[in-house]
Image 1: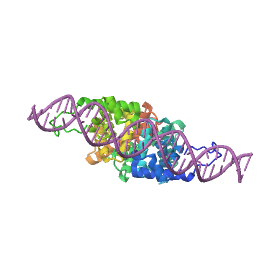
Image 2 (image 1 turned 90 degrees about the vertical axis):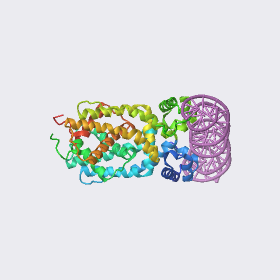
Image 3 (image 1 turned 45 degrees about the vertical axis):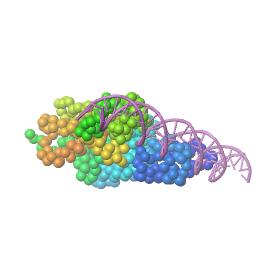
Image 4 (image 1 turned 135 degrees about the vertical axis):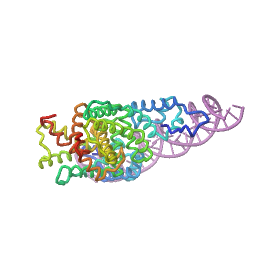
Length: 213
Length: 213
DNA sequence: TTCCTTACGCTACGACCCGTAGCGTAACTG
DNA sequence: CAGTTACGCTACGGGTCGTAGCGTAAGGAA
């Protein structure tokens, strides 16, 4: 999180964990009120009731701070067993959509990703603390579907991993693009239609009638 | 583009079209060299050889300027007829990926989208000058597939539009997420696997060892 | 306890960028 | 010609950045 290695510093005054929490909370509040571009380190410090220098002792800058502030929100995602693969997919899509409706994540996610295109260490940070952690949802959903007999078991681990990555990018990408780029709502109807497309492909999506001609 | 309505101003010294072109070109160059976050209006003006005030007479700020600067790049996307729906999809995926490999688009696209979450007029500008313009590719691809008999003709225009929007978000979203969030390459293999998933759905995607390509 | 080490709050600072005002000049119209 | 608009240039107040320096607070070790 805040880069403090407990091994490194055993002596001296310890970092205030209360300050850590206050800063991250203040960061989220500032994201809600001001949005990414108008959020400043000074404002966060003032909201958190700490000195600006305290922020810089923990984080290199705005990018890293915001990543840590929003990362925890993504861990709230869950995959309750809804009985079928289709229902599970639809459920996680709606959950992810609800997460992206929150102003904090809405304004922060794309911004830090944009920054990460020019900052390798930031990219790794995002990957470790946000992206990769959510792949568990795909893995769990597939495992369940396999137990139900809805999906075949892939014996080749490499192929299985590649497929999981693909599915992850398709689901997360579609939801993000729908909400933030197309700027249209991800509601139950859309989630249902998307799930049908994902499970059955382009043919079945439009093809309730046969392409006989 | 630069908000000048030829009807509005018929008299007086006309806007320099050369300056327009120079500014947009300088903006792209600055994006390449500095990236979104370090790009400044002053730097763009200096590169373009114009005064900073000239930029502000045409654009409200960095957001609008960058949108206009990169929008033209997206118009280069085409959809050559490759003989089948699968080939067409794969082709456009690779083209879009190539576009997102360019440092200008890479750093700018996500950044302006992030800004647009807090700026309605910017969101409309992005939609009009970038997003909606690319939906033509989906419409054209579907039309072609229908002519080939690969897809059924959807008689309900509302359903057809909704499906086209869905497909657009899935394709664009997946590519963007793969490249910018997961930060992994969109190569021929990935495009092929993605296309298979899109056309045949999750079942067939993991079942590709089955006989019968 | 008394040192030692590290964290904290606070202030102040140069550097940079923002967006605009004001001015004289340039270009085009009727 | 006069009228109108665009341009280049300079200068400015206001804001943020990231850091240095200082005195103080909170722990661990002798």
